Length: 355
Ligand code: SF4
Ligand code: SF4
Image (cartoon, rainbow, N blue to C red; front, top):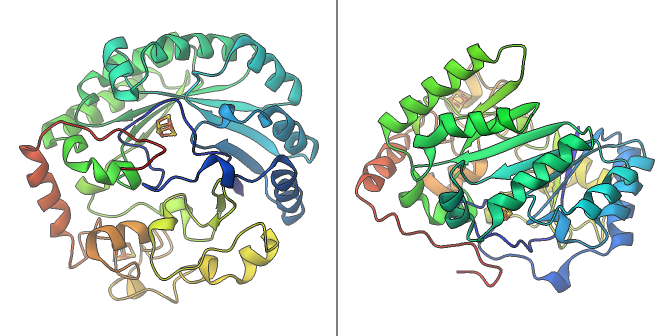
């Protein structure tokens, strides 16, 4: 269904919750425009419907407009996932002319000083507000994405109000997913139980109030869940993610998995990677599942949860996702919340040079 192209790991922001890997791809390792175009051609031939240009910051790529035009010309639905700080009037006009279909704009907070602090970019929030205005003036659908955590979640009502004021068609309130830099900063970011309760109630109230006006997606933190989410809709089931240097991954966090060699789109066709590679087939379906997943009636709903989380928390990518209360490691999630309770709020910002 979807191809996620992480065009670059470069980004002017430094969000401490970024799900990019700790070792980011260097600019010189990035695929060139012709290589990305070939991947887009292969994706269209494979029957892919949507392409999401992501990063890092995709607008940092000088050839983004060319790539959007190429994807659009192949009949793919095009979406850009952006921080918005580089989305100038000229960039917006070029993207529109290239046939962009949708833009997802991320915000760090509704409160200016905090948003700039959390993004590590002074003046960033003001640029985002301008970008949102440009997107709406261009007549494009806008998703306003707010990543929430312990240091901003108490302002969730203000975030929803901001999304409404910007004329967003969809608001996404997404709790941090603890991979990459997010995992590194987990103790400073995990929300406390009363904060989660408040956030969930605020989202539910807003959904009721805004029914038929706009959609609010809500992504809850796995650490409070009793059952896991279907990560990427199932391993190797709906999406292909390509890293800046061309590694094909079943999800953006999969590079953390040891014992895998992820195929490169530089060496292998996308159709082969999808159909035959170990990386895409090892956890596809339910034949790989351990107990209790293999006899569980939710196995084709959540597909056993997230492999990266199973590795990060339980130390084994082939084990039950510890977010599931039926996992023998579920208690480790509770322990992480207890450890976070008194942890320092200091954040390690995401940097291209690594930790
Ligand atoms: S989460 Fe922040 S640092 Fe990471 S790519 Fe997005 S805007 Fe950049
Ligand atoms: S046991 Fe496995 S399949 Fe069942 S709910 Fe838990 S993770 Fe999902």
